[in-house]
Length: 217
Image (cartoon, rainbow, N blue to C red):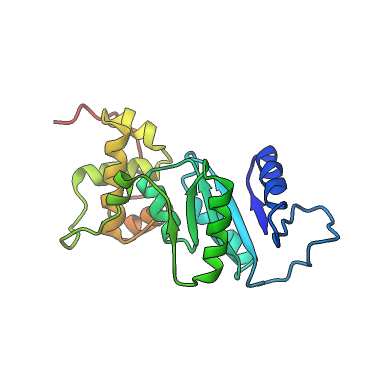
């Protein structure tokens, strides 16, 4: 088992807790006389990925883990409840996604469960955000002018907050528009959306947030 996080203290604390669980071997880069050697593609291996709400690309982190260890079962611990984040996690190859505040016994049960059930995804998230993941009832249409405007700012490298300030709309509205864009373009990330928008001629090279938009009508 490995724990992947940018917070060493968090990694150390969780490592020590999980090492007390029977038959759990946690690798942290230090030599261990009790843990078996790590084998590429080891079926019983677990990776715990700890990330936060500021990470817009959890799927990229998951992809790099699976490239290195294809057989690993990945459990994400996060403080993000955003439905776009959850959708990226859901479609990235992860086996479970839990809140950072999960109890140790619950985490242990989930780790056991993802190894017992190959075709299951375990998700713990706010009900309100999960409802936003439901499929649209009608086939998606073309991008609206507002959605194209937002995609131009996304392509210019702006964050959701900067886009909301530029267009005088809330950050939640920006996220809602991006959800619609992702569905219409059949993508799950900003990078994919930008590429497909350019490919369809919806954006032009050199476009971006150079002008300041007025308040929405």
